[in-house]
Image (tube, rainbow, N blue to C red; front, side, top):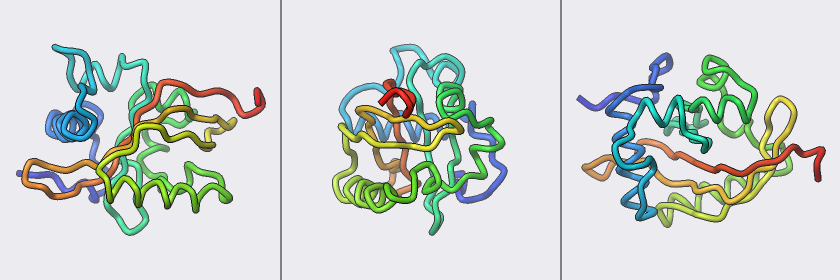
Length: 157
């Protein structure tokens, strides 16, 4: 059975089906692995040095996944993250740019060079993010995800 990722309250941190959706979609779109060979959901959530986030397909998409690197970067706990509409991860002036980004991803499947200001509790600028559509094995779009491993404090600019 395919989970409905629009249902609130799902804990996808170690969910193998959700991990497979992210990893397979990433590999199909970006043509490289999301995790090292032999690593899976637990490694991605607990040990990946890269931030990995995902939001669902609600009309106002809400985060449904944020690995520990994402929680540290954005300074939000799991419980705070999974109740946050993803649009609130961008400052108000950058939300139009964020909408253009998401539309480009929807049209092309992914984008590999996104840069922008995102809201952490203290502010962070992300660099070289890959954003991709989460598409299941039968072709249904289930959300979008992003990964990046470079950021700096806004005050450092």
